Amino acid sequence: MDKLALEKMAVEVRKGIVSSVHSAKAGHPGGSLSAADIFTYLYFEEMNIDPKNPKKEDRDRFVLSKGHTAPGLYAALANRGYFPVEDLLTLRHTGSYLQGHPDMKHIPGVDMSSGSLGQGLSAACGMALAGKMKDASYRVYALCGDGEIEEGQIWEAAMFAGFRKLDNLCVIIDNNNLQIDGAIDEVCSPYPIDKKFESFNFHVINIDGNDFDEIKKAFDEAKATKGMPTAIIAHTVKGKGVSYMENSVGWHGKAPNDEEYETAMEDLRKAGEALCQK
Image (cartoon, rainbow, N blue to C red; front, side):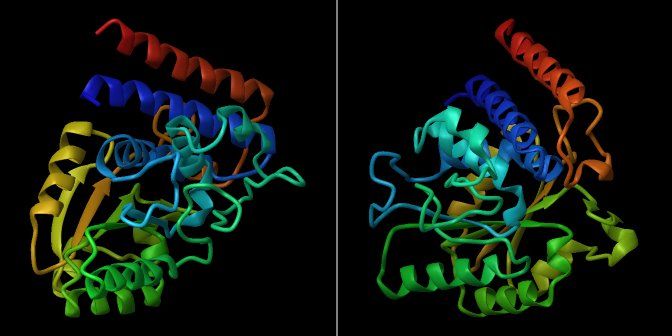
């Protein structure tokens, strides 16, 4: 996909996020929207995957370590063809396979069940090590939250990945600077994030995580990096794309009411129309 096509798809992913959370009357829109461009690039450009064969052996693996942003992952999977887009409206409903957090047993395209913060990166390290041991071609991607990296297990996993030189592992930190209780540097600051990962023998790249040119350059650089894992620090806007949600901590884990839903969808409709004029 070219940049314009990716930007248009990111709007569709954001519509899926807002619609599913509104339908569920629960969920986490803020961090899903901030990472929507990352989800879009991974699933429509970066990863070697096949929606018709979700378990193919040589597929690239993805672990959503910050599992509460499942609405973003589900919207990307649905638009990529893993399951019907209309099923997004069943998010968190009784009997739906689209639970509040990713479930590898029931959702096509989900490689790891996640949601207990801090644990996903360890699972990704295991996948990457297995790939190394089998001399497999696949790469492993893990998306972590910047609040999540306050968890000690993240740094145990980082130490392991750096020591084992897992250059088939790419960690993305969604650095939107807000967690459930407020600004991350006021809750329990993980800054400087880049220097910390460098100290664990990672190749580190800082980018605007809502800019597809920078996203592409970073993932290309990660693939070209040998002998060490890569950490991409993606500086993003929480709630990106919805006017009243942007940079607002209150939208970490809250669903829009009917009026707020209409405003959000109008914002995204206008964004899509603007892209069509390019």
